[in-house]
Image (cartoon, rainbow, N blue to C red; front, side, top):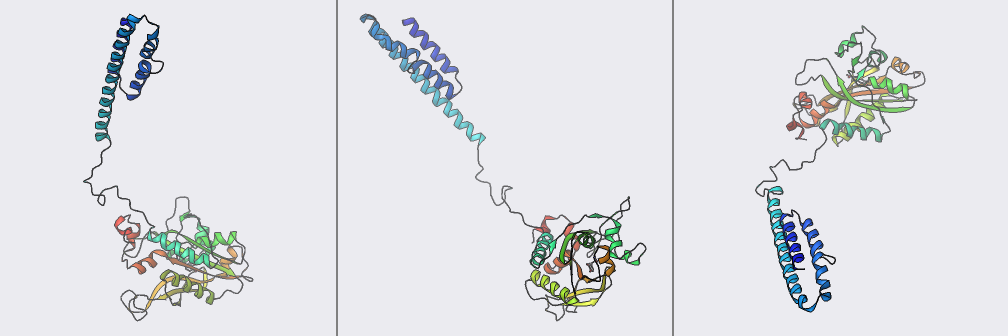
Amino acid sequence: MEQKLEKIKKEALESIHSAESLDSLEEIRVRVLGRKGELTGILRTLGELPAEQRNAVGKKSNEIKKVIEEALDAKISGLQQASFSGLATSEWIDVTLDPALSFREKKPGHLHPISRTQYEIEDILTSMGFQILDGPEAETEYYNFEALNIPKFHPARDMQDTFWTEDGNLLRTHTSAIQIRGMEKMTPPFRIMAPGRVFRYEATDASHEHTFYQVEGMMVDKDISVAHLIYVMEEVLSGVFKSKVKVRLRPGYFPFVEPGFELDFSCLICGGSGCRVCKQSGWIEFLGCGLVHPNVLRAGGIDPEKWSGFAFGMGLNRLIMMQAGINDIRHFMSGDIRFVQQF
Ligand code: DAH
């Protein structure tokens, strides 16, 4: 019996010594000292032993139990200590780091000024019953020119220098191309708007960019007049500038409208009395518009005898430049985060 006890003690101490986790120590405790453990088994059978052996075996068993328990406790606190000091290297926080300067600082993003103004105009126009349409940036000659009453060799093609693709298509030079696509889809009466990116084969400078943004608008109904056009334009501008804006029309030539106009709005910087921004005129040149040419309606499958319409196309970049006092259109496409962060 003594030998058996010694064996239990020896094996238990060895496995405690080589244990590497708290879980394996618990296993050892259960195996030796648990309810059905090796040592517990011996203590249970003490009563069956002859009286002279009983005392000695009992004493020895209790000694061994104590030794094993102490070894377990020592090993457990050793392992815990090691895991705490491991934490200090694996999960440290640098309390000297300034959160305001660190890359961890979370900056919520915001919309690019072009998107923001585009969405604003979309809200204003949709509230007046305009539907938003989209169209391809790579277009055919037909949608960009021909259907808009600009046939091949028409001098008006030179008004918009064009990026041509090798297969005879082009990058749309204006969102007016979407008017035709819209008319093909819709049945009058309707109101549509089409925001989008447009491209011109141009030398860039402070006021010219090869890529910029426009919003196109078109309303087709019975007996549409210039008065409808003026009302919608005043609503859009007053909505964008959040104050009453006056507009005026000057004759302008665009092959897809007749009559065609250049629309100016009253300068908001000086209130119309003349300043540097409006070149002392009190007015800012803003967009092209007019009453839709019968040829254009016909190209869109609409009978010009029955229906009439107005259309307009505005440049978003120019509008924002005026609003925010930006003096170089190239900032928009520069990708310079410092520009965008100012908005
Ligand atoms: N597409 C013209 C441009 O890019 C702008 C324009 C003028 C659009 C008159 C129109 C319009 O719809 O009626 O310069």
